[in-house]
Image 1: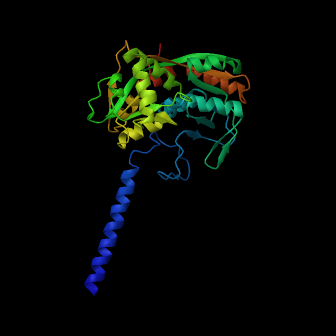
Image 2: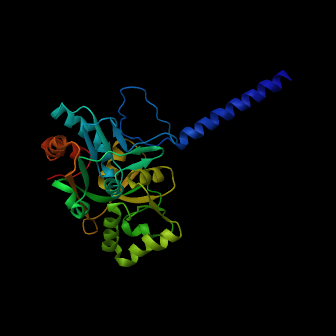
Image 3: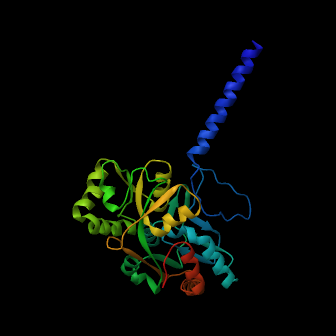
Length: 307
């Protein structure tokens, strides 16, 4: 009887360890991928309490910046560089959600994430050139500060042998695709599909494959696409070059397939200083920093192109 109890306890122990290992494996690639700002208690629970696209000081910030989401990887170095150049600013709050979502937040006055309502309005908003042009009446100043091109992110080893955009139309390739409804990159990728394979390719990937669920439309592409690929839910996804570059830089198991220039498109990133900026001097200072040689150097380190 004693041996039976010991064996049962051992089985239960091994089962618990196995379950714990499975849970750890399930979230092993979860964000945040960049270093959390931690000057006190750190409480991040993978899959439960994890808010990787809200940064810094939410209480009484001296500067609020809404960044186009695909620039999350630059935030740590960029804001550290800004604080060094302008040491009077110690409390900064930033968001890196999709630019379409950020635009809705500006227009509606707030956003709710889980149970938290955020009513901060930005001093500076960054997005693609077309979005900034569309919202030009909101800004007192706008500037170009970086550029980007498309690449295809695939699983390590490229098991589906994806060679280009046309392969994303294959029935056996599960695609992760930004939703054009709120992701500016989505509309630009559709342009690239037409360049690569005509309207037929665009329709196949964006309509037929969406219906049969071999194309997945993301809610927050710069997080979901790499996670879906690393967890085996998708095999390929068109992304900005800098996103695939960053995942490789931090050692995550993905590979990058280049898109030839004749099929590629370019993103031009612009920043707009809000006419209604709560902190106008901070907004002006950050705009000046964003177009500085120091900021351009930081963007270049993360795979962006700058003039």
